[in-house]
Amino acid sequence: MKKLKFLFKFIILIITMIECFKTPSFAMLFPQEIIDQISYELIIAYQKDDLKTVKSQKSMLRQNVMKLMFVSRNFYQSILDAICNIPDCWDYFEVIIDESSKNRKFDQVMSRCDEYLKNNRILPPLVVSICFDEIKFEPHHIQQLEKKLAPFFTYIKRLRFVGVRILYETSVLSFQNALATFSRLIAIDAQEKSITILVGGVIPTLSPIHIPAKLIFSLEEFSPLHHRLQNLTLNFNCQKYRVQKLIYFDADGSHAASLITTDRLVNMLLKFSNLKRIGFISADLQLEDYSKLEKVLSQFSEKIEYLDFSENDISNEFLKKVFSKPNYNALKVLNVSKTQVNQDCRIYAKFKNLSRLIMRECSNLEPTILEKLSQFGNLVNKLEELDISGSNLRLKDVSKDLSKFKKLELIYQ
Image 1 (cartoon, rainbow, N blue to C red):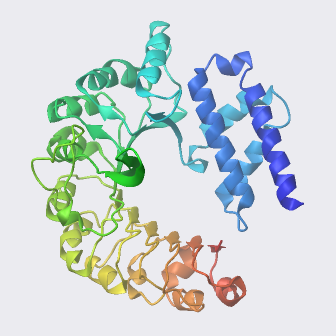
Image 2 (image 1 turned 180 degrees about the vertical axis):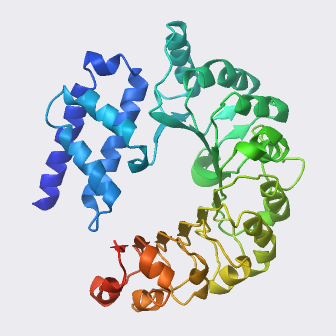
């Protein structure tokens, strides 16, 4: 009955949002594609928050805002203003350009951007991220990034590249010039993606689309971004091979001219001066790789706020070695999900301002986790969220020590 009630409420939400987004005051602000994307983001946020057993302060605020939207169509503009006034309570709104979709293909989005630009319209600052999903960047795509996309999305701060290809004909320099047109850009995420192809037209097989080498080269050689970029996340989705052995493919199917090694990636990171968020996800990191990453973390020890080592075969020993500097006072979020890291890691004492520790699906966690973490005074006073979802620990075995922390919320499902 409870699930049915939620489903009914979810359906009503969709109907209400679709109808309310047709109001003239809202339509004047946003093109229909953006309205659809905003409604999608809000629906997903609401669905996730409603299903959470333990709700964070942000999720409660998001849900309250969503409930206000049921009241009246006239509230929509006010709610939009409220969302813009509380950006810290929303991760971000993102426009997804997806070549595998029916109505969000690259050329379709470019056409609408061009149409609105001719009417002297640009997008307000609500949307701050663009995701390119399975896009093949040919030379004419690069031109449209510069002439249509960047002038329309003037407040973009983050670009995400998921399963993209950069064609042989597209030069590194032209790609760099396109990045430069996003004057507020401070974050880049790149992610490998596996797609299903039919071998011989019959047998379905997963085929990886690697992070393109030209994207790495662009970041490596483009000095204007070296000072401006604050967030850089690389997700390799590695399964059975090391980053050192990866061969990156250009879009024409030929092998790239050179391999991208961990050493080269580390040297690229060292060229940046203001990185506050670093993600090195599913890169098949091993203990012997610590010395390479130690250089990066040492350089940013006073700046790094968010660090993501998730989905790597690393342990407490790796963290002990990689955090060689005595203080990492700026670090607020550490993600070690799907690793061998557990509650016995003594390195937590170095993180004086750690507020979120994410340990989803960490197989070595024990029921004594809160007891062990409470030995660190900095965690007792500062830790606000511990995510151990997917660890198979029972709440009653873990939560008995929750009162030792001043403001900790435990996420376990």
